Image (cartoon, rainbow, N blue to C red; front, side, top):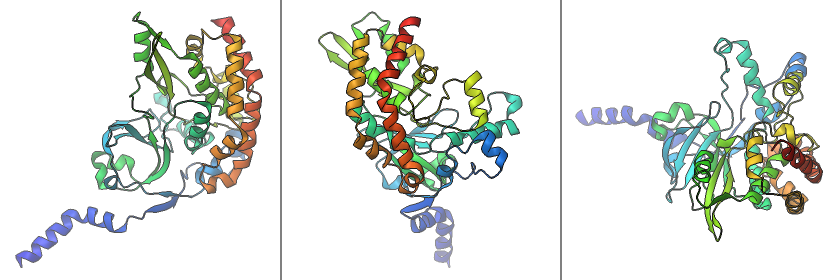
Length: 364
C-alpha cells in the first residue's frame, strides 16, 4: 500500500516533466502571430495591408527543447517590445532567443490599455517577421561580421524555470550575438576609450560597409545599442570593428495612410522598403550622429570605392540566396518581389549614397 502511495506522489510531483518529455514534437507548424489579421476596408486603407499575410501564415519550424541543447540561461533582456532571453553555449559564447512578435506599450500613460495602444500594436504588422533570417547572407557577402540565426518554437517547457511563462508557446529567432572569439563592447564603452586619448580609432571603412547593408534593407532602427565593437591590434594602434545586432526593422514597410502621415510629419525614418534606395537621409534620422563621427575620415573617393565594391559583392545570386532563407511558406507570398526590390535598391546605392555623403559634409 505504501508503495502505491509513493508511486502516486511521484507521478503528481513530476507529471509536468513526464508529459512534456513524452508528447513534445520535434517540429510544429504555427504562425508568427494571429493578432494582425485585416478584415475591414477601413483598416486596410488607414493602417495598411503591410506584412499581415506573412504574420498569419503558419510556418513549420523546429521545437527548441532547452534540456537537449548545450545552452545555459543567463538572464532576461531585450528592449521594451522584444522578449529576449540571454544564453551561453559550452564555449561561453553569447546567444539569445528573441521573440518574433513584439509587445508594444504606449509611450504615454493615458494611452495605455486604450484603442490608441492597440493602434500602435497593430503597426508591428509593418515589420517583416523573419527579416533576421535573410540579412546574414548579405552581411557576409559585404564583409561585415554577422552571426547565426535560426527560427524556432519554444513550447511550455519547465526547463526555463522562472522564465517559463514569458517564453512559453512563442516563435523565436535563436541568434548568435558573438560571431567570433572576442566579446564585443557597447558603443558607450567604445566611445569612452576613444575619448581616453589612447591609440584608439574606428575602422571607418568597415563601418560604412555595415551601413550600406542597413540602407539596402531599409533598416531605420540603428541607434547606438544596435552595435557591438571588437578591438583589433594594428601597427597604428587599436582599431574598433563594428558588429551589427538586431534586425527587427529590416524590410519595414507600410502602405497605410497613418504611417505615411507619421513619416511625413513626425518620424521621417519610416520611409519604408521601396524599390528605390533614395531618401537615405530620412532613413538615417536616428543614427545620423554616428555616421558623422564614424565616417569623418573618409573622402568622397573612399565612399565611391566602398559602395562600388559593395554593389559588386552583393550579386543577384547573393540576394536570391538571402531571401530564400525565408521559410518556404513565407517566400511564396512575396519572395520574388523582395528580390527585385533588393536588386533595384543595390543598383541605386552609389548615387543615393553619395547624396548622403554630401549631406553629412554640410552638417559635420
